[in-house]
Length: 395
Image 1 (cartoon, rainbow, N blue to C red):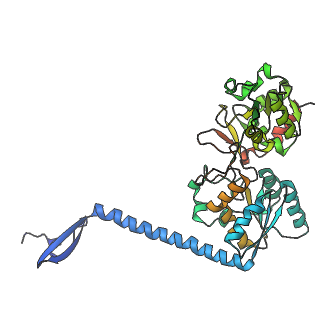
Image 2: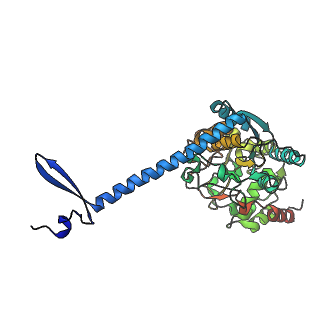
């Protein structure tokens, strides 16, 4: 008789779950506390939710891939060597023929705009430089939002990317930056310069270096714009540093990077500026044993620029093969696609879940270094930068 009313009526206490069983003819009552059941139920719910998400993206991917195979073609307008990158895509998706239109960024963009003025819609995907992609194609209304085209979970997972996804347009959904190229631009002759004498870019303004630096012409355009952008928008440098560098230091200039490296190696000039080692051949000269080197990402306290180079991706609107374009975009941004990009072009990807062995050391991003994203929307406008250059560079 010692039972309470609730137990006699078959009701269970709200904080307990009970199971009855029979063991060797005896009734056994098993009590499972609620604090144990709650996490179990949450785990089961979580797995069910994940399964629903998994089946959702997989169904969307299968549908897109099926439609892409029916379209049978994707037309990629891209910068040099992306035809070799997409040769890897062709191996994985043999039913989708890749047509590559390869050229310099400005030429490729101009071709797209000319075709569209003639009501010819040929391109499906654009891959190229940030400035061209933003100023010509994005502002020209060429792109559809790329965000809705991202399907693969590994692409959507922002933890796989350095500081998450990077979009270079004002809306934050059209021009996807997948390149992450460190931008060293100060080289030196190892016999004439002690790198320990430099801890800041401001050390370049020491009067003893006046007339002893050679660099690319600051009015040259795209070849030098990323370095000017880094200086101008860096709060520790800014217009003041740029103006003094161009006005006070009697900078010797050339438009020939090979000439710059040769004169640096020969000791005619102890310092070079505005030249990326990989583009100028400074890294090759160092590998050959010539007395040249450059200041890496962690050397100057003000950091270094980080650019996308030609690693920018746009989904062209009115594309003739929209589903194939989506498959191509997801592949390029996938682990396999970004590894192919690194191995063939040898520049760094923003994906951080892939090995970096094939990336040129001079462009490789280093963990822990300070970087300024020079291709971010806030810094894409070169007009104020070039106004300072024009004012200071009166040659």
